[in-house]
Length: 126
Image (cartoon, rainbow, N blue to C red):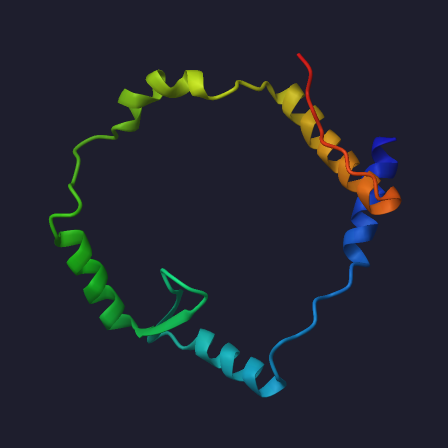
């Protein structure tokens, strides 16, 4: 059963239709050339669905200004060791066997949805 489910999922991923391209060949070539340019940084914008192209020296200067400002504080040691014991009760512990069972249930639910249009929510019992 595991092998059949896995092979079916792999097969569906292989034969899945590729998304329709939204760039012309000229735009795609221009984008590849921009990505190859080492003197610029291409970044997603903080807000909106936009892309920003910055000169690398400008980007490094702005990053240096932010790091050297009073916004951030340099710490001498890792503070997570202090807070980690306090926060472990928020995390549900899963051993590796339970995690693998959950992953297999998720894969099976995807298979059932793709093959039979059945929506299954995987749930682990104690």
